Image (cartoon, rainbow, N blue to C red; front, side):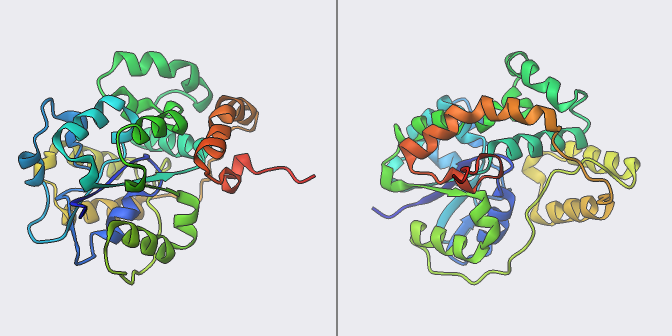
Length: 288
């Protein structure tokens, strides 16, 4: 069956912005009008006709890159009710969960949405998610990296041959090879790309005023009016205002806690899904 949609369902802070920027240039791709459509996690009664209006005009496979879709099984249920699962090419990018959590945290700090030290956010996370609408998107630093259960839900709803799981680490190391794999998976012709840097969360700014202005403008403009040009301007301002002289690292004493938190989940990924987690910085196999 011809696949009508290419949907990247996860995960946050695993190269999905880079993926969107590279693939939307492909002549066989109809990208969403914005990177993250958030249709199935926000619409109460999603409808295929309404969803199709969110993509650029033209021909080709429709691409939606909304990495929160995989986080909630109810969102996947809504997707499957609106679309034929067999018509969807489902893409998943996974990243070392500890690095992913740290990147997610740093992004929220840079947005003035996170007042707590990193170590204090782990015990606070369940309550924060329960109390706030879209709490997982804002503060799900650690649960967002429990991938095995999310993959269980995904494979229970889509044909196995319609799902492709890739590692962020492989994607960043060889972007052309990764794009070639995705094109083959989605039934697209190969496309030569210009490798670029992955978007990263920013904590330290040269000017707090500029950072606040960018954040204010981002919140002021409705999603429906945001364009790629505005997105590029925003990220250009963010890059110019970034202070790379200050380096942040995960607190060393917190690392054993996080490794213990994720150990069973990471082992399941290898055992049940054949994912080579030894490529992850914090889960490399010890040599005898």
